[in-house]
Image (cartoon, rainbow, N blue to C red; front, side, top):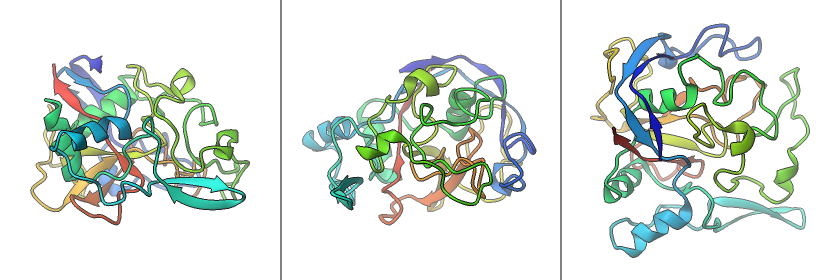
Length: 264
């Protein structure tokens, strides 16, 4: 786990900074852009792997996710086939409720949205976890588009072997956050502890904000391998990105993983 110290940072979508001419304005759910303070905490350096989650299954604590054996797309002789992911791949078919169970088994919890974003963004307001450089194939697992934002650009070379997911920490050298966390952009989106509300953050406190997950809709942070860096949602890899998902929705889990956190 990596330590993130207490203190303020700027959270939310920064209009004209996180967005670009192709993405349009910030989504209302990611506003307002404001200074938020979080207490110190620890957070997993990488997304929880399939191998780690299997240990929870073997212990009889966790249950098999809905798409446990079909979450990795691999090209074979020009064909794409969903096959069981390798142990070092992220556990990318785990629901929000299952992620909570796993973290509790580890004596941990899911990070709040504010914790996740600070761990990804740092205190300097950077657009991407690694800084301000636009994404390349060395920064993250994603689908690159051309600068015009209207057609796919060249595929990254690693897609010859990994058609969808890639092993965790594969992009740490260039893509790590200021706190040393890997894969905070690309690979899989990640569950957060919060409930989701399309109205945004305005009603939440500015100190340790948390939207209690009382409903069925919960928050996911970041973007998965299917994100387009320069498309009509050009800020899809930005640290401010989030969206909702169902707590136990078996239809939305193939591109969503998680990491755990601890007070501290």
